[in-house]
Length: 154
Image (cartoon, rainbow, N blue to C red; front, side, top):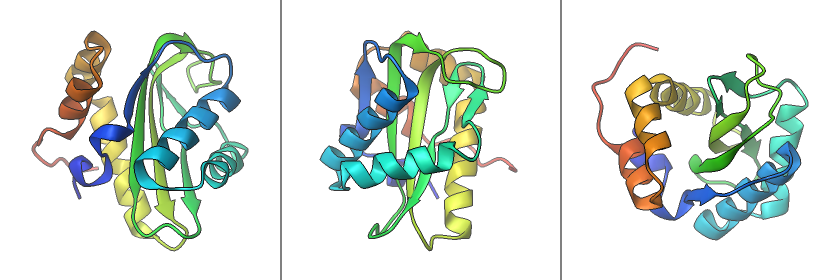
């Protein structure tokens, strides 16, 4: 599994400022709708439902909200770089500026976990994170996220 298969260029955005986690989920849903044809409302509801189980802010300014959705045929991703970090209730209480949303079919099982692990590994790579924070062009952000890396154990 590769990020280039999960994340299309049109699903990468720079967003100036969002005022809440709810607004962030709305943005993720709208981007997923535009890029992949998902129902924005279903995507937003899925993210909020998953978030109610526990925060998806993993620390160091990174959040990995995700949801399993009906009527989705493959796993897809959305990436947002926030110009102004957002309070997200992350595990380390730090505001978030890098958000990778993942949407998977309801019955994707282990593939959903593999995709989440791949995204998590990528977002833990300090050189990747530094490049993402240093660039403001969505095309460059997509290239940084999808460039081939040597596989590592989870």
